[in-house]
Length: 283
Image (cartoon, rainbow, N blue to C red):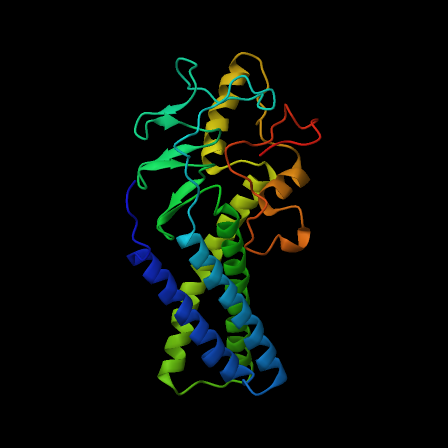
């Protein structure tokens, strides 16, 4: 297994951007527009600080949390009646086996060439967290993106509101540092808000269908092959929107925006369309 450095250049860049946007939003935009001693200023500063803290916390958790590895003792039990689905190789029809890790692959597991190991329910390798996004840290990663999007939009709204307020009053700031902070914040926030919103929308779509990014691309090919022979492809892990949400975010709706992962199970076994009628499924 490749030893991973927790801190990388992309991570340092992300933390620097977060730090600058927080400073500019609270101490330049809010303080310059509303004032930090007013009720409106304090409320906006407190709300944005809470969003920033949750963003940094969940970002750190996504970085350090192991995405999930395959136990060395794992061997698929083809005679287990509670496991009606066993993923096989595209060619040959044998059970999926990783030649590099020298062990069988559980359902939805894939080998990461960067991390040099198989990752449970692998979604993708993310350079911005220097880690894979997989079974154990997928929800944490999703919640981070959610908080980051809300924080960026909040900051952008405050920035636009402050600029509009200055234009309306025909006031021109004489301090160059303030002008520079406004310009840099705008240059960072607009593309960042757009990119993170697209990323959030993409993962909302994936959660609704209980897919990973890898499974989406594999499903496109499987759908094309099924249509060629007149069949209809169904993603085997798609249990319906609500069940899909519960399987990823947890059974308690109040915890959906919290970085909790106590509900996810081992990552070696997942419910499928073929066993949803069973009352209790081992995970």
